[in-house]
Image (cartoon, one colour):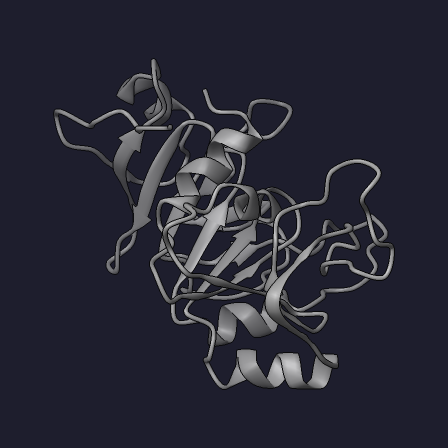
Length: 219
């Protein structure tokens, strides 16, 4: 199985040259550390930043430079800082090519729940609802199962929804999956050493898998 950095490394391979990319809170923020140096990508943070770099080394943090998850970050040459109104103008005008989000649940129809667990305190929904309504492409970085071993890839989400029929691809510690237009998860790749049957047993929603599903290549 992959750890969180392994998930981020695999997702980084989905980023193409020239992309404007929004990184959500949690595992997605780690993707900034693994983008290949030979491609030109602009990372956007919805609190008002274009040109976000990798996390700073210990002792080199600037408390005035943070991402949407309030983590200290770095900026790259040519970066730009602005207010959140302009940032969400970019998002709503579909200027962002790819959004990478965390999730608590994803349904086989591409619905996502990632902002609230009933009965628990939350600071707010953040920018996720704007992002899932506006992004051209969305990849979810998440754990396949919860701490109790229960699947988080479901026929229908049980938690309050963030967006409906908007998720295209999911990367977990077990697998890379597409969400099919007609519904269901298509298994594209499996984590090294993880069998198709293991993934099937960890997926409560409909799962479609070919006979020979390749292992992920994580460099």
